[in-house]
Amino acid sequence: MDEYTCVLIVILLRGFFMKVFVTGVNGQLGYEVVRELDLRGISCVGSDIADDFCKPDHAFKDFRYQKLDITDEEQVSKVLSEIKPDAVIHPAGWTAVDAAEDPENREKVFNVNGHGTENIAKACRALDCKMLYISTDYVFDGSGETPWDPDCKDFNPLSVYGAAKLAGEKAVAANLDKFFVVRISWAFSINGNNFVRTMLNVAKTHDTVRVVNDQIGSPTYMFDLSRLLVDMIQTDKYGFYHATNSGDYISWYDFTKEIYKQAGLNINVIPVTTEEYGFSKAARPKNSRMDKSKLVKNGFTPLPDWKDALSRYLDEYLKK
Image (cartoon, rainbow, N blue to C red; front, side):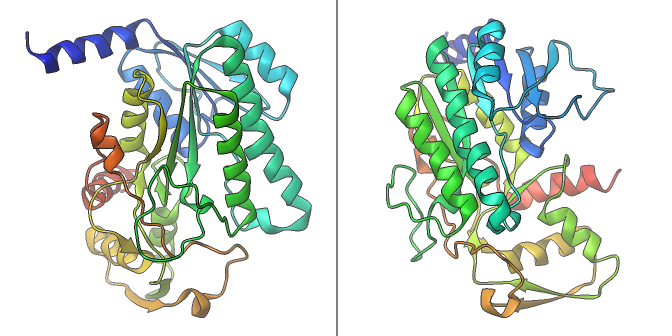
């Protein structure tokens, strides 16, 4: 039996005996993680702040839903101590970047993304279980053109959202040794609102769109990311990672052009600077290039090319 086969068997056996707790399962990534766990036969408890799971007609085999407010430390501790998971995957959080800038929302954003994540981390520490936290390119200020290294500590978030996610990162690292922090950018998924869906909807009523061309980064398809996260949580390769889809770094303008090309839509896309666009309350990092080489160094399979990911997304989305 070769080494690769032995490693694969170990991973499969680990998964067979695991129980994973997932937050934010009504969101884009949380739902995809639950679906991937189910495909692999891994026991899962999913949580969100809503009363019910957003897919009441789901056919997941070993899954149950648990309502949970992650900002309630006592509730988090009680729920996780009763469930006793082997690992927690934590995508839940405040994701409305512009709304986070409103003065009446700032405390709420830090309560969810910072304090809420700290509550999860403390509960994981008490149980001695692994934790995987989803973070963002927004923890960096987007200066320069060099891809950000996952272990870089030159944090300078430009927005309330970025600062709150960074607070979550620090809470995880301060409370745990067995943790993963996975930063992503430009998320899109079949489940939930995202840039791709927005551009497709805009095309229904406009023949010309203006899109920013000076913010550079990579899209992340939640279906692809979920597979990596489930692989990751079955290892002890702890630390900070960047995980977006492979391929060339692009602008939002480039991404939009490819969306319409693959969808067969004849839309005039006009490139503009961030300043010319001018609609956003929150400052966005212009350099969201993230170095993903640490994934390969630690034996993980990188996410597929973003154009391939977009093609698969459109195949599924356009069937609906």
